[in-house]
Image 1 (cartoon, helix red, strand yellow):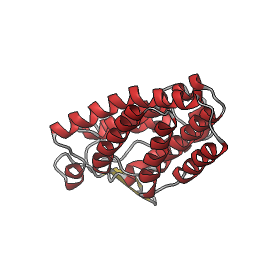
Image 2 (cartoon, rainbow, N blue to C red; image 1 turned 45 degrees about the vertical axis):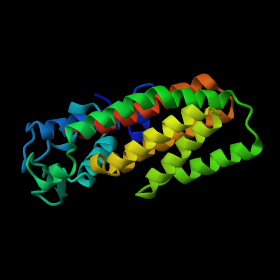
Image 3 (spheres, one colour; image 1 turned 60 degrees about the horizontal axis):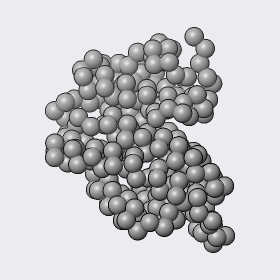
Image 4 (cartoon, helix red, strand yellow; image 1 turned 45 degrees about the horizontal axis):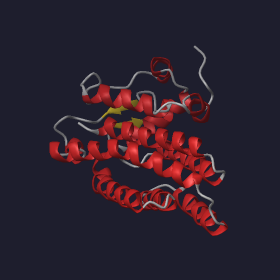
Length: 241
């Protein structure tokens, strides 16, 4: 079976899907680990076999393994007896850190569903407006600020999405999106670790959304924002118990 040569190639194939190949493979491995199919202490299958099994390139698979390391689910050691070994246990401290109460989980999922209705509409409304040079510049500045990694990403991400809502010129919509963003940020740090490949996918979608808004393409802005918030929802679901 032929695989793309890079994560970027995988992403191109999944542009129209809610989850790109990285997210699909990550979700499958997290599910297998949590279900006990890959118990604590077990070694992940060889790279060639796992790449074929998950139908992703080896580059994408390595990115998935790095994400699992960052999430505290596996550790990787080099050498003849090396490989990637599962750390996660259902009763471990790591598991407890990522566990939410059922009430908080329902609230989070409800807000994620609400977001898939709100934010694509806001992006489309913003694209239909005649933006001033100053507004385009401010939008580009927020996009540049959100093209980052680490803890600063979440605040920059909120500011970008909030400004897009502001450009829609609908106060009720802006207030609703601000409320959703507040609730998401109360819980996201408890659920999803910072993962480089997932952020890269988010950066690509942010750039496409801003380009569609600046060019006045409302349909494209709606489509990409829908895919973007949908991908975020699916990624978060991966890490919920």
